[in-house]
Image (cartoon, rainbow, N blue to C red; front, top):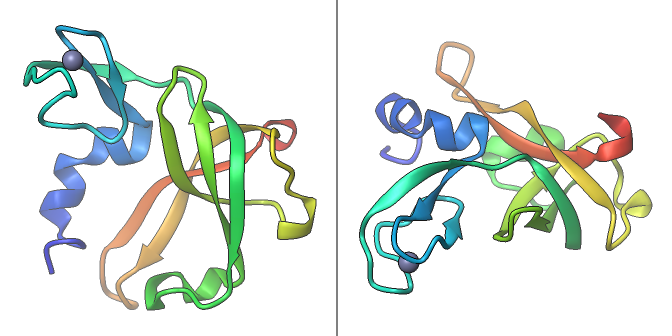
Length: 134
Ligand SMILES: [Zn+2]
């Protein structure tokens, strides 16, 4: 399966592990995850390291997760405005749905996503937690 391939995980490690996106070389627009064509039409990008600081714009609780995330159920996902501009949809951690509030300051943390069985690859990535818990 391409989505869970170790090759794709390796190629996307800076994006998935470090919250690295891209900046358009022409109009300076920022993107996460990376794009291959900017709104301005340019196809030249330079890597851009996001700070991981964000504001929570909206959130919801997932009670019927996909198989990979069943162990976290119920868990929350949030729409976050990164400090540098782009909005991202990410999994939230270390907090319950009842304690979340729109406008909360959040920060990115490196966490385990899921494993492919007992002998399979373990996938890691970015989740967001309230900044006061960091
Ligand atoms: Zn552009």
